[in-house]
Length: 629
Image (cartoon, rainbow, N blue to C red; front, side, top):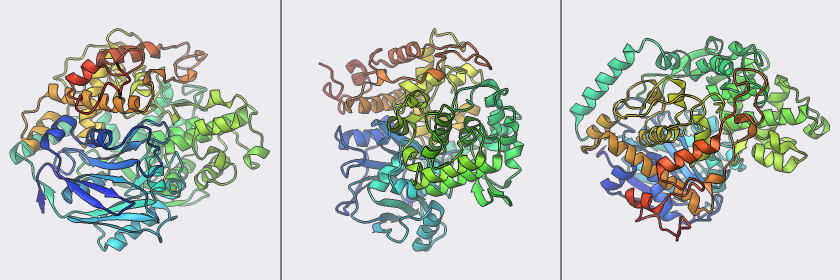
């Protein structure tokens, strides 16, 4: 069963059990590419504003990109889309592994789900066969057990599955969707949306393949790119291939990129044993490398801890964000405890960034005397106390004891605690911030407050250009040179980086090749589709996707320009020591300049209607949606 570059879009209603199949017009793909581009188009059309993310009327979608399931390297990604119960805004969450490939092999591009089942269900897909089946006997199981069971039910070990764990079932705003026993579609609480819909997971097996428009272009472009990668004898490609993102921890602590003790401190002097949880000291536990399907980088790995109180037989190697979260943020240099915490989060189906940040917030509340020992179930929540860190993590994931207080993240916990704890809750609009400090690279500030998904580090940023690693995401884009702490032209640079980024990731590509070299995105899209596609169209498509997601937020009644960054991340007050001593940044100016470059109102972030028309969004977006006269 071979499929064209454009497959089916499936709509499933969990209330009625009805399943509809639609073939989207090719021009929709050309305008929205795939991933959360297609997701934003469908949800904007079908989901009315003010829908509670946990209501039956809300949608959750699983989308692939134009390049997913093809021979384009690093094209394994699928995206989950919906409305975030964390922020009340647009939500998307990206994951690698092999699930996206299997969706395309089944001749499907997108799966959209609405309604709420009256008992636990999972979705079974084998090529043209699509069914809702009972998940009664796997509800409550850990994600690894659920994934094994789904494959057993399918009767084919080659089937691919995604599941939620107990955290998602109980509606935790920090929950995540798990695939391949530890690959996570995390952030924004979309696993909790699945839980509220009583949807445990999806298992799928496809027997076809995506047939490109021009095989010769695909093969030639692929071979040239793989040769190019092998020629890179240093830099990010070699780091990722050798250590994965775990190779970045020590460097990022040293330069101040990763905060220490809940962002109170920065630099290696504040966390002198960073090397203990970075690079070789992580991979020494690795017994097998891991690559997403069709990826030449192979940044993943399986690890084990063979003895001691944090013994783990098989777990995924912790990523940089996980190491930062349960490491410097908690002043913890015990790598085995971090591996254990990572596995706990994967089994319960929870986001390690948010859970670790929440533990760090709890530790600071204890340090400041806001919470006493009795209030935290007798735990001694001291910085670096690994036993207390692990016990609190387990309580949070189980939603037991003091864990109930922290189970939905720092914003929710601070609102319940009060007593001045709010200033120690580091988040944007409820989303805990990833471990990339705007005081080091101000482009992160623009991303955190100006992207339609606030607080996220994977949304496309000019920070890469500020770091000097790459001047442009594509050599055909003429992007002005910018200095780290100068503001001129930052808005233009950020808009170009971000717009290209949207098309890149919506194509189904991992963001790593975007940052390590020249990836032939346009050539692959041409070969797959047969379009006369060029770099300008790639940027314009990205701008359309970014603007439509912004319109989604505005239609929800939000004013994006009002989002704030915590003072610790903008130098208010300035750090008194470390690599960012005395640094302050004007993130409001950065945001306004970016809005201006995008054709959005500089103060509110609301796109102008001229921009809507230029991007051919006026068939979707009305002036009323944007509160415009």
